[in-house]
Image (cartoon, rainbow, N blue to C red):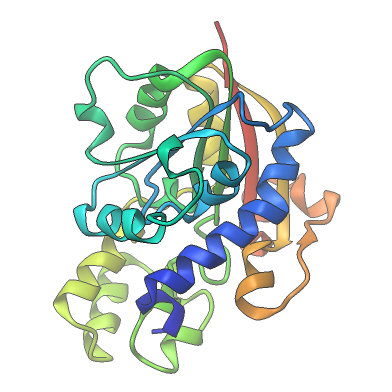
Amino acid sequence: MQERHSDSLRYFNEQALTTQKYVIPYLESLKKIDSSLSVLEIGCGEAGNLKPFLDLGCTCVGIDISVSRIANGKLYFAEHSNVTNLTLIAEDIYDTVNPDQFDIIITRDVIEHIPNQELFMKRCRDFMKPDGLYFIGFPPWYNPFGGHQQLLKHKLFSKLPYFHIIPRPLYKGLLKSIGESDAQIEGMLEIYDTRITIDRLNRILKSNKYSILKKTDWFINPNYETKFGLKPRKQLGLISAVPFFRNFLTTASYYVVRAQK
């Protein structure tokens, strides 16, 4: 397992840097980001992605099902000058009654973990203002590390690309044979079962009546700049245009969508 995945503060800071440098500029081509806006992050973890918005004075809300991660987030933001603009909630969004509506919603590196993504995307509409923007960033399942195998404890297999796409029974047996814990295997199989591709997300967006306002496939994920020092690179247009195949060479996809009336 890479050190950053066991160090939540380091991961928090990496999220904040990537959002500041890439996500906010990506959104600003469609809407000016300033203190007048309200921002919701679903599946926020410690809410590192919200920090650059909070720095700008936005009203920010983060929701995550993990009580411990929300507690960590509150600790990390305790001394922030705009902390009164921040609300962090440990809750399942399906349990939220009469949800507020927001100018911007973010799910970054989240949707690939969520069961029943059709239902999830339908639920997200309840949190959006009529002219609200929804940013989605995710690694397509078939990309070299789409199975999040970098989380494994095994030194070789945590660095081995593509092996996560083998049939599920073989994958489970392999994880067991290399000594991964039952809890780790269960977590990896959850990612296997909720896997999502570019093509599948496009279908989900269409069926839930979202308009795609902006989309970029990345050959080198912007996350990799803070993690590995690699310069982000957009996917070649020719590859990005080829259904299914593009998933194998795309390490991240960025979308900005809006709910149709």
